[in-house]
Image (cartoon, rainbow, N blue to C red; front, side, top):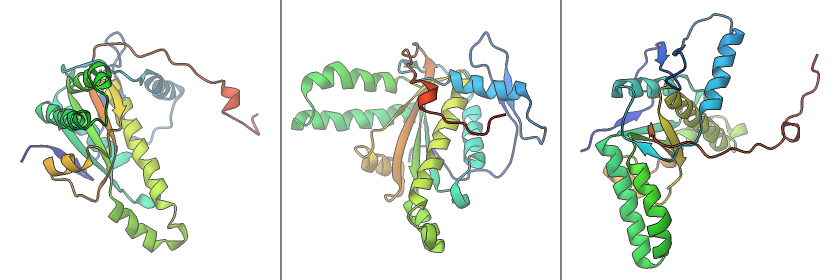
Length: 248
């Protein structure tokens, strides 16, 4: 069976995770797990990391760090990202290099079948979808984000008052794992983009990498060396999206 990383949790150790620069011209940063009171400088660093996280579609297969650093990063996410009632229902599948390429070959084969059946127009496939998938395949790796419904159901039964909320709460935690890893990969020097080819790919991916069939695939985070720039980002007015009361 192909090699892969399936994590929840993979390791119980806590560690300080050094981060390499967001861009070569910027100084290195580090995340720590200390009890020091947050300083404006650390807050600024967090904001800068959030600002640097952008969608990069054109990716290469050059990695600025060893694979062990990526593994450490995924461990940090699975150990430190919160979940409601500490459910810990998020599951991660990490595919690197050849396994990453194999994943996107699977996706391409699925779409070829859709083209042959007439479900996807040939011109759309040749001019849009295929170039996009080949670009994704050219990256370093993919992190697939899952939720374990059976695990969520246990908490729904245990806390019946909140039974209808555990599934959306799990989605919140899953999204935080996505954001954590996307931002942290950017800090290591990677570019990344988030894809959603589920449920088209769920069954063949589960078969190829021995994933329980009841796990729910949520998203795929593709990363690699940034070979292009992000598109221009427009923002709606802050006043339309934020309300603050009691400000001194």
